[in-house]
Length: 156
Image (cartoon, rainbow, N blue to C red; front, side, top):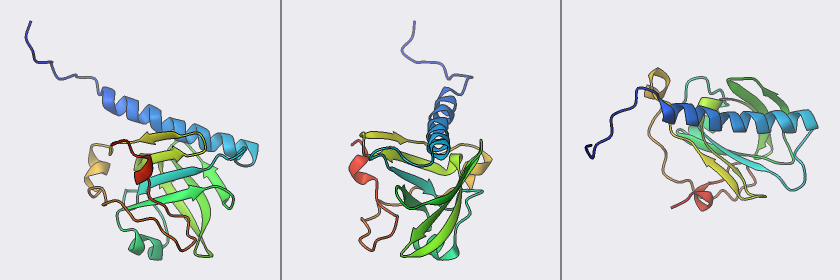
């Protein structure tokens, strides 16, 4: 027996990442079906802004050219979820915006009310080639927007 492990021909890491991303989809499906977030639950969802399929206003893309974190809490509208993406309306500095976010673009999900978090690896293959390297951590935003940094929730 040797000390090296053979490379798997089964992409276990990718399968696990896809399964964890489905947790985000199921949670969004649930809050949509129930008409909102229960109790003190709220979500921080980080995503790659230039991932294929992400649609967002130009001014937000210019401000967050690589990664952005949104907060889903009290004020959101037009939530739509399917197997590949979700759409949501949010307000940024009192300006409404609609976002279209593929689940594969998500890099983090946090529900701080219950100390639950998921971190995702970038997808490999053709779509991932178009995704830039992760952005440096964003400083917290104090202007009332729905963007926050997830650094305090990341495990060191």
